[in-house]
View 1 (spheres, one colour):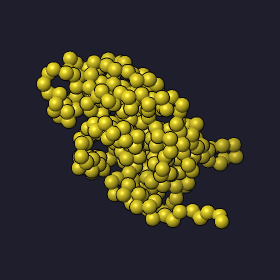
View 2 (cartoon, one colour):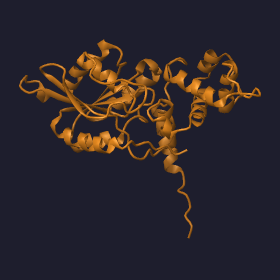
View 3 (cartoon, helix red, strand yellow):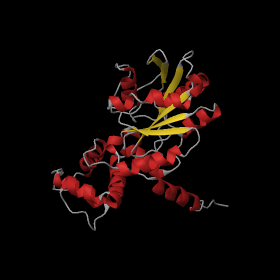
View 4 (cartoon, helix red, strand yellow):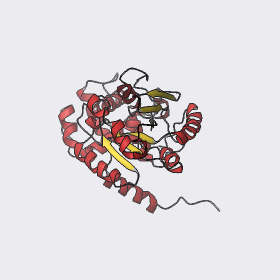
Length: 296
């Protein structure tokens, strides 16, 4: 299932971000700690490297992610030139308050108290940028919502006399290269429901959970998962939650919605959808996959 979701306002938002990049010192890129690479917009890297801007990579929602996997991702990103990675929850004011000083360390030329450190916060929809912005400026200036693409325009705010930050709309990229990335993004609600079929996304998520977190599935829904497939997991959720249609058949659509929402809310436990190792394996498999034959 190919997933593409690129609302019209994102084209103008990308152009504006490219223009603003010229006058900022550090990019704060917010990603979902549960799927850091899948939620990394390649356009952000392209824009900041073009202007040679350092990046504070913020793995947000770390309270929902597998801590061991998050530790591995931090090590992965902190090996990259011009990148500093940190894992936070934007709902934790203490963790958020560290970000300006971390940005300052990436731009030592702004330590002279003469000119403000200018930061720009970027990321895809629904990774928690608006909640993070509100915490940084200590007042509600960004609209927060569960639907992707809540912020629609670029805004600049003063954090202190030494720090200013530019907020940008959530930016997707026009073509998601890897199908599993699209499914992980859909499972985490970074893509609007008009672009996906919940049942397909739920089956993908169930399959991944069976491989990596079977005990969490059993603990949440109260049935054994040994020897069953992803479809049976969703059907099992329907039965345990008494989600049945007329005639007694499991309501697959409603059960899919329950599974997805439980994952998004952290009710299944702390889960990461990808690791540096699974990411590398997925990339390698896509490179080795033969190109489709074309007709003569």
